[in-house]
Image 1 (cartoon, helix red, strand yellow):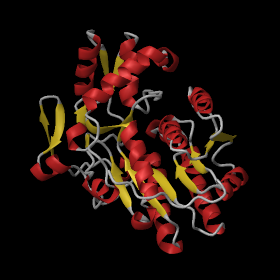
Image 2 (cartoon, one colour; image 1 turned 60 degrees about the horizontal axis):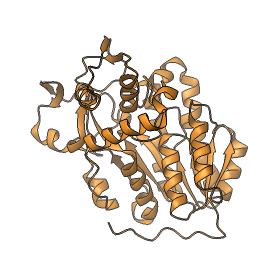
Image 3 (cartoon, rainbow, N blue to C red; image 1 turned 180 degrees about the horizontal axis):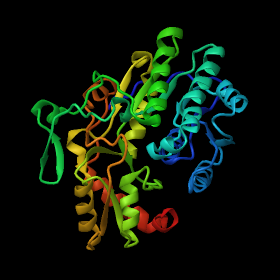
Image 4 (cartoon, rainbow, N blue to C red; image 1 turned 30 degrees about the vertical axis):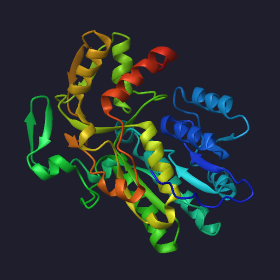
Length: 355
């Protein structure tokens, strides 16, 4: 992979990572600090386990990582951090569909209102600081119009081309659930600030990211959640039939894509890319459970619940656009990544802490 030179950094201004103590954020901050960059982590530390991630970052990079403990909706704190940075990776968010259905107002204020505040702060400061925004595959809706058929334990498109390539960026946007609306609207605001004001910004629409330091729950982070439950010998709730399919991507590959987007911001500004494992890393819930059983040598107990609002029976990212534009290497095979995550959970006691 031939990396472009990073945008110029003056006077050691830090790179701002909002949500930098979260799962993807802390892995990204760790990579940036390891590469010699100063990193400013902006996080409210409201999610269970993220304080441990911040401690881990400070221990590994005591001279590189600093932090602001504040809510992303704190406009003054956010504007101050944005005014001091050389680049922004905006990952802070309300991340669960279920929570958005319980409290749509909070979901809106965190995901959309705070993003617009950040964009405005960058615009007022001259609009030259690069921004990479963490969006979601939920911007494409529930894909109810995609004809599917069940192949053993997985739903797959009837259309052979779609099955081999996945959902592309030219798919019409269709926001479902408050979470889909808030993240989708923020996605569009980022792209429009690039278009209307020349902000050097780009969007990554993530599928399912998994890996070390993920505190998986029933509402978000299903790969780690399934492993955590299984390692405790506890039952796993399956919403729907368990044949729904997602493409999964190791967090190391996701971090590489974020950094590649930042390094190439001049050529990719104003563009949105799908970020996922692609068809080669597409798995159903049942297929993951079978892999966990093979890794643990134990049967996984499951219980079935009703389908959840907005749940896609099939989503697999067409990653060809991102691979070409960002010069990304092939993603890590999911079976290897899941095995390593299981080993990490055992070694670090994360399974018990996060359950």
